[in-house]
Image (cartoon, rainbow over the protein chains, first blue to last red):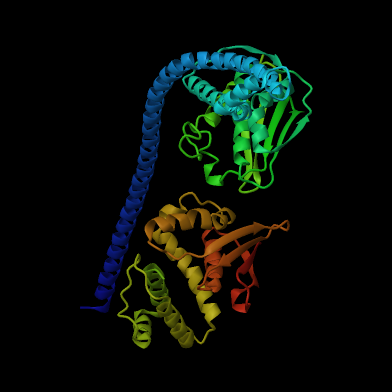
Length: 323
Length: 179
């Protein structure tokens, strides 16, 4: 066979190889594109799946909340009725006690006077000692204040439960926020005194603010009580309450020097039933309801906190009614 | 290094010096049977050994041989990957699209193609700098490929190797002037 024949055969083989490689490349490209499409479809499916899982968990959560809401409404209603007469009775008891106490105060000096006989004095002294009236007169005040404090807490819980189940009035008006904060402070005056914390007021908002005062008071109450609780065991106890205007909004800042909030809890603290307090100390509804109320006011709540240094809650509300 | 590079080198040697010379090179290299499949990866050292032997045979410095191979290789690649050149109509646009289009397409065909990174910068003078980065430091091959591309598009160019990885830089700058 001639050399030329080999060369021709070699060239044919080479061409065949190039064509085979071309074919392989085309297939590789097709494979690559199919793999890309598959990968995209897979990503899309994964995304949809994640969305579905999130939606499912939201649905379950909503369902749970709806059940809890119904239960809460029932419980709140049932507790509210006895609570009303307990509250009213307690006020009556207070006035009765004051009357009795004034009688005791009038009688007590007789022990040292000559207006009654020694026998009467002795009988009176015996009665006072037997009934421990001296101790009662001292202890009553504390007992009464603690009871009132407890009732305020029960009332708050009931109010929170009612808000949770969306039972609230629609009483909106232009309100002096500073006065509202002061009146809320008065309600918890007893807790403030017991906590031994200093209060600093820094009210600079001059405008009346469009709001539902009843609801907003509850927000203030929740935040102030939380601030006081946060400072229970801290050496510095300073509660600063400030208001100021900023770009058509009022900023209400409640700052404490308490133990602070951990960063990982920032997202959770506004969730219903989330609480870091021990069982019986908190329902985990306070901040959830506060958040909802502020959102209903087209406002916002922001937290700045540093563990062991303190927390600052800033509520921002539009001053004027939305047109 | 992908087998296609070896295939084109073989073609260049065979075209210019004959089949016997390529056989001699394979014998001398003693590293392989000389079977290279386009899409398969082979040791870089094998290619460098071939280039070394060719340089010895031609009594030419490595840079010159590699550059000449680059010029030849461009045409070889175009013949094999015509589809990649379908929308390329002029040299400047082609050079600027190497990293974003050509290398992306090559990535679809070969697994781990180990491609260099290429960046292009225009100068007010009308010149263009192509910045080349690759651990293989095959800047003469890149220069040859640029020259091959210029021939393909019928353009005359001047290439100046301003900065070089072989002189301690972390990249090479090839300044291209369109004549």
